[in-house]
Image (cartoon, rainbow, N blue to C red):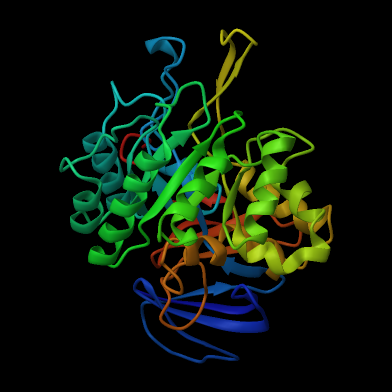
Length: 382
């Protein structure tokens, strides 16, 4: 099936002005002005007064649900296809959280395959909060090298729910991720759930100082959860590291507000990504470690933060979308297949109106939502 988006203002993320975009099956075939074709099955999508941007990549989604920290009744349900589509997420990375007891890598992989069958590009991380890391094959290295969907590993540090790992153990995890990534031609990232403790970045620094593991493999996330951690995170990216900001965190540390204060250091923007932590649990604890509140995290904040950068902070569209498109794709070793609209890229395209609302979503060349109407739902959402 071929699609032709006509007269749309294209951001690749770079501003390319008004262009036509020709999609053939799941790929961007051609980008040019005034593409003229005549086929019986050619679908024309009028792009007048709309902008086209790459589909969002959300690298931190609890696709099998998070939670469970206040008993089984607090387990968050699995992500539904429509949640991803309506929020412009065409590529997602699933992972486990606190609960690696009633949830496991096998079920995570099964859910990833289900979402892929439904039309969303889906990858996962092996591991969870705990150490030793739960895996599919018994080895982080083998999981990443041999399982197509697995591109890295997750571990929690500096958190009251972690396994209190030491530098040697973190170095072992990172080494396995790096070599597994090399063998499988993948990113081999180590996503580090950063808790509120003081030792997180110190632990990473020790590993970097004592080993030859490149800094690019470490992806600290939730770095905006408190001011002290954020301050250390900003110092970390100045040394060449990468950080991920969660869109679920509260003001004034919401990602849009954080990067808006960095406009004089915008050369560091390429080292920052946003993710939703979608369908995870948002939990609060008192000074004694007792759970006092719990809820589920929405996926919608990912687009809301991008929109906020444009509408409230005056960012150009090309700059505002990098944190959820090209920056993430480059960190995950998926660029320019993902995170870009260029000839040869996957046909993951969002069309936004003048109010920056997502009105049309194309994933892998298939129109999933058009003019605000959801066209495709998960099999159990019908």
